[in-house]
Image 1 (cartoon, rainbow, N blue to C red):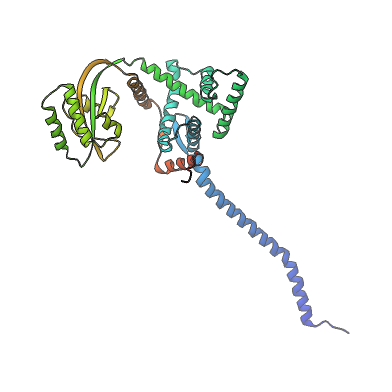
Image 2: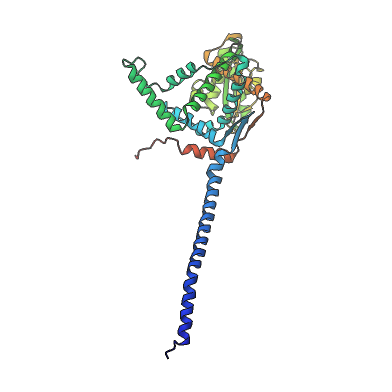
Length: 360
């Protein structure tokens, strides 16, 4: 009788057992693989949300019950960026970002209080404003009205597609601009057309300059005169010798012309306290901490009619003063720290049009 050797029986059992365990091992292996992939996907998703989705949805501004996320601000800035570039302008990213929060807050304040002043923006006004922006140049008097309409629609739709705003969202931004301008006009009605004004002169000097020597030279040239022509000539002399200002200011000898209150708000207390011909104390140049200003007034005149450009500046300042006061009546949250600022800058740079520089 033939017998199978014991070791062969044992090997066969091991083989049968091994084969019976393979499906289990495979299931375990695939389960571990799937769990690992899920964990990796969750980690990737978390970092993606943390770095892209999360910041975009984070609250940036709240005015009462109206909220804007960082992403909302970026969308509004991109719309302005594209509009400026389309019109051939230069979008100054850093400046625009700083102004964005303030603009959003003020626009919502105006929307909230506009009904109290019976100020509105009609659909017709919004339509006209949009057409003014997007009507193709050179076709103010077209012979083919259908061509004008076709080109307008192409430019307008292309713009909306590029900035990824709906037409309703963009029309709402146009409405805000119209309301702001109407408020500015409303407030300007209370501004007088004449102001007390001074003929103002300014020299920019370095902090390290010999201030007393420069002042002494001016007073020696003036020799106690209060004749406006002598005062202007003396001041022009020290400006052209010592001033650290730009070429245009040097050419004019530091003469800023007739200035009413409200043009140089931060310097007004110094300027309008000066006696004719006297030099002011050194005043910091708030735009350049390496410089100081010295002012001189060569003439004064009461109730002098405002120049158109001065009237525009005063209107803007009056609107700003009104809105600053109105802020106290609203619950406002707004924050722009370095981290948020840099995130917005990075997002805008992704869509900023770069003009290539040719190789020499």
